[in-house]
Length: 75
Image (tube, rainbow, N blue to C red; front, side):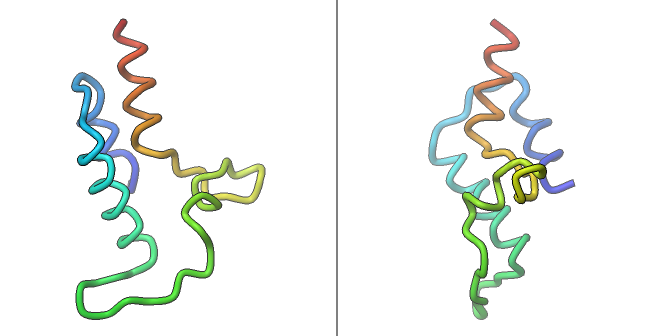
């Protein structure tokens, strides 16, 4: 569910890098439970989380790559 909402919006529009930075921050905050007044220690790097499941990650794809693949599909 974490990646479905962002993928729906990216299917037909090429988004700027600032939007991807914000999407990434929201996903990180959701996954690690960070809120504005309380931050937790992250035991795993975001690059590790974005690796495929068979390599030990969670299979979450980076927003920039998802948007690029949708744009290539349209072309």
